[in-house]
Length: 321
Ligand SMILES: Nc1ncnc2c1ncn2[C@@H]1O[C@H](COP(=O)(O)O)[C@@H](O)[C@H]1OP(=O)(O)O
Ligand SMILES: [Mg+2]
Ligand SMILES: [Mg+2]
Ligand SMILES: [Mg+2]
Image (cartoon, rainbow, N blue to C red; front, side, top):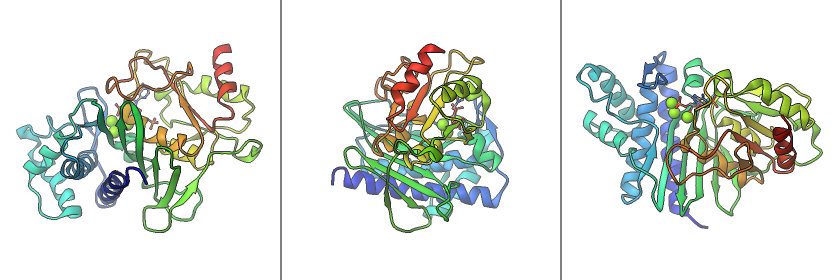
């Protein structure tokens, strides 16, 4: 199997990070700190990035990591208690560590795209995490501009499989697998097959300002989806499409933030998980997402994720609207 070592190390790291995130949600009411761009971050976002970056830096010291968080704010003197808290949670998962270790590991995620690199969202859907809803830990390997490995940990997702917490893994050319985070066998998953009317559902963000819900509804209707959307935070939406629980995920630019550009860590892991399950991922104009030029996908607008068979129809509906 290709990328066996990469997959094994990344999967183990994402599992450990998932354990930290769930411990934070169990042991405290996570508080949001505000970043410079006004978006929230928690001790779990930092802890998760520390754990995964440590594992990647040890196993693949030459690979840059393009991660969402950095430790600049956490290193400020007035944040000492907060850093201590992050360190305690990291310790809980991996034994002895110092606050300096933690900030160094987090800052290992300040890399830039290269011939081969990883991209990491330590908690995707921080707002969902804070609300007690869905969130994801998303890690992907990009080589020569193509997604090669994706790991998507969804600690609060069950999709009716009877165990909460699902992990999706994908390697280019080798399919997508889903397994319970709590332990158990991995099974291969496939997107919705044509004619499966019951699963012809669409998913979108809970946060109205992360998309354009009225246009998303109109487009879904235009392609024959009659059920109301399922609203879900984070890249767990990609998991739902990969597992065949929804046929479409629409993320159209919010009229409130027309200049917003999607970030690679918000889509890389989810995209390969869906593609390897047989689905298709493009921007709203049908262009492939650019995962290699920069952390921000400057030349893409919106994201459309489908089971593949309805993709062309969705593009026509978007053009007409
Ligand atoms: N205006 C926006 N349009 C699209 N996505 C956004 C917008 N603002 C923030 N986000 C991103 O949406 C993601 C969560 O999406 P979802 O609604 O699917 O759970 C977060 O990674 C967040 O990025 P950030 O962490 O930079 O705030
Ligand atoms: Mg995040
Ligand atoms: Mg995110
Ligand atoms: Mg964030």
